[in-house]
Length: 640
Image (cartoon, rainbow, N blue to C red; front, side, top):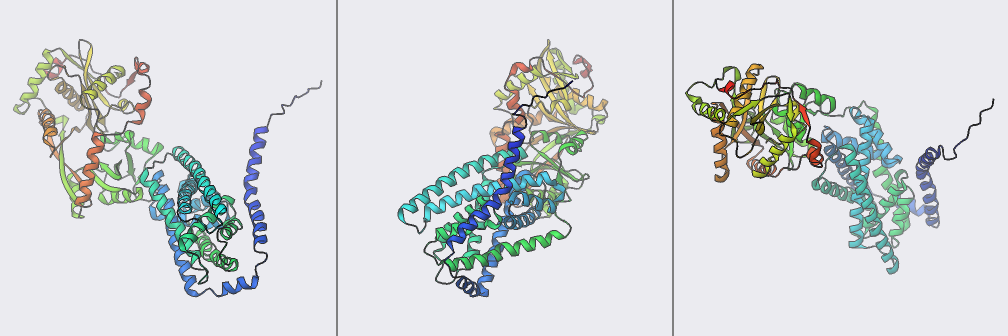
């Protein structure tokens, strides 16, 4: 029996098309070299070769030296592209290592062609711990960000200076350049932000402005490296030459040919019709040596050695499974805030929780192990931010002060040892009175493994509406990502939820996070909730329970609110541990305090909440399981 297979003529068409595009991509640089080489040969066919070599031989040692210095300055700026991208992607690579890897990658990439691919391989060689995929992302982002910045600089320079071309041609070139640069800028910006989202990088106007500045410095120094090689009396005005160089650079970039050969030279000659072509060609040959050949040779030799660059071996950001393991048994309960935008930097034994606050790398709470102000200084330098210690303990504040930092006490943390705590004694007289009032009102406290999320969420919204919204940084915010790992205590009257408290947890400590309630709750309800938490912590063998911090030095209006909070916490007779704000200088301390105040009172929305708010009915029957031991009962079991 014969089987006839019917072949779909469309089958494999997508693969074939993709293969064709890949082939064309590989062919483009070769085709560009051939096509632009032919055009360049026709343009310079009538030039006396001896005149070119005579001009090259007349180049003085001073010109070579100045060109080399300008090249060095340009490559120093080039390295800043990588430092900025690493900072945005939070790779943990020290800026100096990122700059060195970037300089080597661009030195070889611009000379060999296939810039992004060559650059990715060089960066992988320099930073092997990042992996090829990560270094490829970095290379693409560097290329796209430079292209966007170049489009801005080129369009501005063409509009400001113009070129020595006939009127109609000048208008055409100017219009085409500005239009093309605008389109290219738009495409590069869209592609850049797409890559930023794909890689999880974060950027702001400061980062984009820095990229634009470094592009201006880089291209200006590169143009200067060529400009100083022109013979005296031949060089045009510097601004005019810079504009011509930018347009030629764009042609070279778009051709993707090694060193922009052909396209760069032809475009430069076309933009400078009044300049001696032989002198320009001689300068271009010398420029290929100082700006391409020498840096590429140095980069190649440096790559022969074993790679020694990579993420800093001290504190590094934890991600993925490493972060998940660290949060399973955190040294401090507050490390759960990493779910709300903070990051954990650790080497295993030492660490800080760090949050970006308006350009500051801000630690929150005490360190893990022996981490100090020196570590956050290093972290801040890698992130391109200013270091700050927020709510740090006495030991950290003392070390920072000895190092010359400005230190100010900003509050105190209320701490309790559950095993030694009792509501008996004169210091708890007010607490016992509050508990009796809550009991009389029929308040029931429970710690259940199943949470009524819809009710809690509605109550939290009502509370936030009355109090001007939830606060940010280290202040509690209702977040469904954190609740499943917290200890949660609920207060009911007649079956209706009237309040709840939540605690961050670690193996040895709990820390108060949320206190949410309705305005008409019976007096003493929140006292009863916290008392239940202290008793539960005692039963579970928790060594320390924190009632969180109370601020100091607030304006009168805020101080009145703080006094009520302090009286509430004082009713539990806690130990008060001072907390400090520290920064490298009093002016830095002032700016840090201002930035923190804004971030606390005007926090950005939580990323999880935008999704959760789309459909409130989705959570009408939703419940979460919590790790707490279930306990139910009337308040009488607490007051005794």
